[in-house]
Image 1 (cartoon, one colour):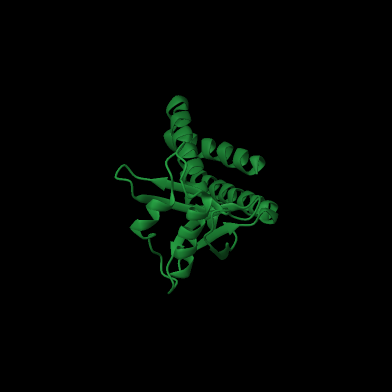
Image 2 (cartoon, rainbow, N blue to C red):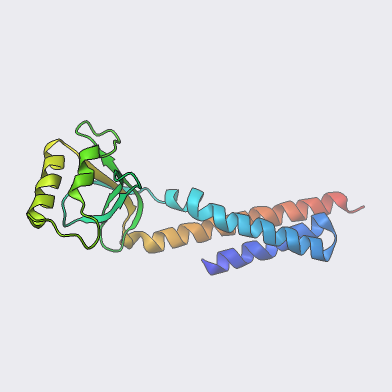
Length: 180
């Protein structure tokens, strides 16, 4: 993947130089555009380079990876651990019908503040999450499995090499139309 990024950055610099026709402003334009692409691709493109896997799991004390509380004491965020080594794209709570939902407000009572122990022990927390499961709440995890790492690397490299070829073609075309 670094080869694809380097080739794209080089040709982007050439294209900026052709268009701007001044070295320092062309370098600034190249840097700005390259940084924008480096920020945009991981968020907007990379998750869609290969079809993601989806798994719906039961919420238990054993598989909870994140449990966030807001300042008012309500449950703000609930996430379960994805498969080992996977790139988790989404982790959302769904109700019995399969629609995205937020956990009921009473689930905030399932969580103890740090350092505080419950008189009834951890069984109370397990019973609380069992009630959540009985009501049909599950966690839907969308992820890219770890075994797709090289597929994603190859796809992103191909994307950057295609952008490089397209930009090279545009530069050649621009120069041919501008020459007498």
